[in-house]
Image 1: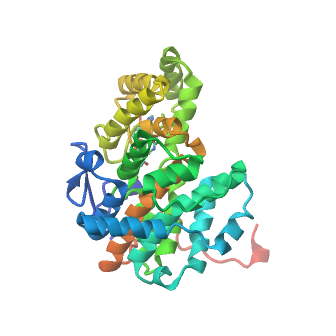
Image 2 (image 1 turned 90 degrees about the vertical axis):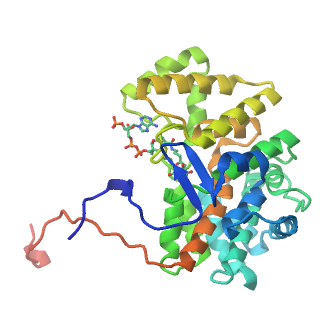
Image 3 (image 1 turned 30 degrees about the vertical axis):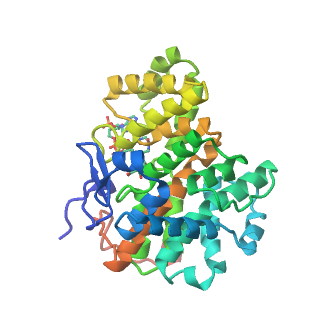
Length: 374
Ligand code: SDX
């Protein structure tokens, strides 16, 4: 007998996992037992990637080895650049990323080919996504091709790939922390899509392709891009109140607010608010920060909603010189670690994911030959 329908699978516990815990009422986010606040303060994206994949923090030797391996896996095969060169420059970067991840599988060396050691594929995809984004972005901007730059850590390499210049230490650290904060988030829509794909015993590259396509949706990824559009529409702090009230009166969603799980402030928003201020101070431009603080005040007064991870991230990326249509690809460049960690976990304790639907359509209709139908 079918149970009660939970639209959007809201509050449905679909599986057991050891990767990520979200305390929606307490506003806490835990990766493999470690609080995100401590990880953001003391670790690096590479260290968090190791933690999510292997379930423990790396030793110094293990971390150095991972850094070296990721730097070595950044190169894009010539066959893939040939495909990227044929994609129109006007295409949306998330669509380009979806195509690139899918196509990459055809040209991978044996040790990372789909279905081989998935940790190898996970590290390969994590390493190469910044190169793919950088290649496409430089081509559409007429910039010179990427240099490998193995001496750069992951965040600094991503920044270099998207900006054609290295970041300052503060800029690199700001992006490193944003990557840490976006690395995993339990069964969010794109991670769930990856697990559904893996649960059929499909390969890692297919699972990540599913995830990229899912993250593209504006209710999941892309909200931070729309936050920046709203800030530019407001222009000044004194215009925020009327503009937001007008949108709410038209039942429009204010991007960057609300969350399916957090009933209080998203702890990632707390950290990104601080970094939005720090990046603004470093660039002598607190304009976005001040608009966002006013936006928070008005939305909380009108709807009692709290900020989510997308409210402040766009202002940090903008201050880092990252174009807004690359915000969600940056999200993907981080979340690929969570996606692949969940795929690995699914392979280890596999159960085909197949919920049911409550059928509400007609029954017992009689078939009529096509020429007898009105
Ligand atoms: C991410 O799942 C994850 O973990 C995702 C993520 C991750 O790390 O992977 O955290 C990343 O996706 C963050 C969310 C980014 N998206 C946005 O900021 C888009 C704007 N937010 C909303 O669309 C919404 O809050 C959702 C989609 C995030 C959550 O929506 P729910 O849980 O389905 O809530 P709901 O649509 O049932 O809304 C409940 C009420 C409604 O009011 P009523 O119609 O009952 O009067 O709250 C209102 C909604 O209208 N509401 C909003 C709102 N969010 C909820 N009203 C205005 N603006 C909003 N943003």
